Image (cartoon, rainbow over all chains, first blue to last red):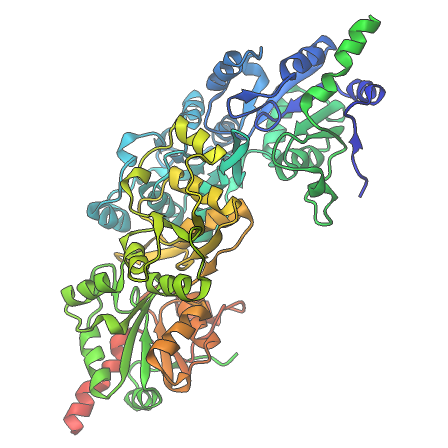
Length: 312
Length: 312
């Protein structure tokens, strides 16, 4: 397989790279920031892209925040954007449920394993749901639960879908409910199936660690609505009317970001080394995806800014 | 593959079956009971086996209880036994850690994902541990945790092993700790990897639902110390000095019980239909294991009792 072109420090190559694209789809965790730490030079790089007329869209698998909540995070970290530029897997999931799955009432409730971000996006699409951040699910399982979950008397008969995202309050009670809904035929969706979640320069359990045990228990794989699912790419294309040939996906993960861009037949993919994957990962014989370009860090493609300004 | 012989109602076949074995290894959940419901006729069947001079050993993957706690359950349900007849995966794990793994102090602590049953068996082998039922781990993850887990300051440097069993108090904080210990090189063990846990005639998340997400996050499979792991069979053989050729494994699950007996080269395996697997499962082309015998329920092999007594 062709090896990717390394751009860091090569101003001519970076300018050529930038000229090939009108739209940059940017992953957030591991590219823009790690947790609440914004990588150096990112703000200036985004400014450079926009000053050259590029459209920037933040495409994230993190489902814990809605677009509104993401906007607050971007603003708080000093990164100018608006909700229209933000595309998260919670939003992608809500769109899929309301516009494609279209379950009919009354059996159209979603049992949510996840945080407020998912609930807010479901609400914005008028999708009824249970579970999620409901405090009545944030407790230990009781003898009454064992009985009522097993015989169904404590289950909501209107649940037709289980949606699993990153749930920082995951517990045995919620997993038990989700398992029963799936056993009773609920559709199994996941906002995304990232195994880990980058934070503070390290890794924590990702959304996949919530859906994976359910897949193991039921023998049923969830339909994932985050990267690399092309359901998400189709939704992005529909919303932004982009030309795939002149669009570049930027990310740190081969199995989500880079695969997403390649399977979406985008004009290019750019890997950054500030997150999960390293050069050895795409050089491996069994590499899940190989990017077209790579840089050490996102701001390396902004290294032409000074130069351009000096020339102008 | 040869199909199993059906014994229910066939008194001659049952007598012949009983005569072939001196030892019966009996799974509990789905065989003896479902949750707190003892199947009809089980007590009488155990009496029959013992009256014919058979040794009975209860071999269970359920790690939530220690042997002492199991004894209380058996006694409470009116089933006469003693701790020497009980062999659980928590006990099997403790034996493995103390006698085979033998990590050297100070890095010999076990991080436990599980209940008191595991802790009690670790204590009985003088194995130091953290986590488990410690109330300080039964809470939400905090900003201080994100930082301290990521930089290691909140981790115990003496942890050399992660042991995952069924944890009814599983949460994101515990999973995050376990992930970090594994990333730092801790040995990954599981009491067992059953995907589900039978209870009240239904299924709840099993111990595998605790270790599975960690395997997914780390790309590392745990060494499982419950059925069908032959580490457990070796320990049982060592303890009871049994003749494998005259030993029969009785269980409801093909992928744990029956596989355990076949791979252990026992003289026979008996499937009961009161638990997870049904006839169609071993008749499937991709059946994971095929038993030598089967009955509808355990008490069917006790159906000779009346007959025998009438004859005597």
